[in-house]
Image 1 (cartoon, helix red, strand yellow):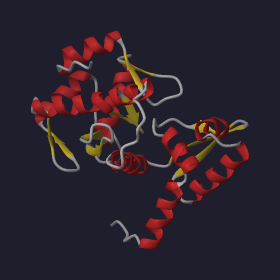
Image 2 (spheres, rainbow, N blue to C red):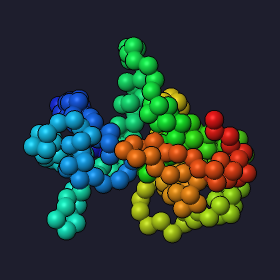
Image 3 (cartoon, helix red, strand yellow):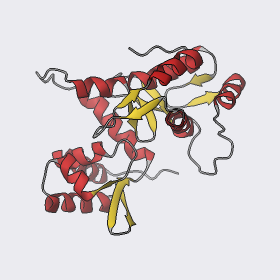
Length: 231
């Protein structure tokens, strides 16, 4: 059972995320990878010493986790739920006052295809969700989804098997996409689809960003398998 969260606790978490440097740190971890403190300092735009203080506060609040590997320490978001909360805040921020700033190449790349922790987002993520629902492979509700029998066969043919998963993570949840303002697929299904597309080399990461590039093989595969054309 989920405990009731007090207003004080909610305000504390919101205040942690409200700092610009910490917001940049959390945003840079949204692709699901673990980064060093030096890398996070570069993303946050502050000194290494200041970044260390921010990481300590985020760790204490259980928003990020640290793993040691040799001499290095790597930081990542502690769970998919943290990533989903950040994505929801990004969606909320997109409804805020307009900023008179032209859309740059990086913005367009993020809107086209990106990772949201361990699943796909942007136009690519939305297109996959639409394709699965239009082909009656998936039935979506407001916050979750259920695979149909045809959906299970489709995933099996695509090389995805959701049965052996031992975690308590839901098979399919939805996550509000901040750029498209519609839900994309999260949960074990969303993560498995993302992993499979990396394995097939349909998508590849863009350096220093959580934006993804759709490869030539990816464009062909998406069209033939899902009926998707991404401009």
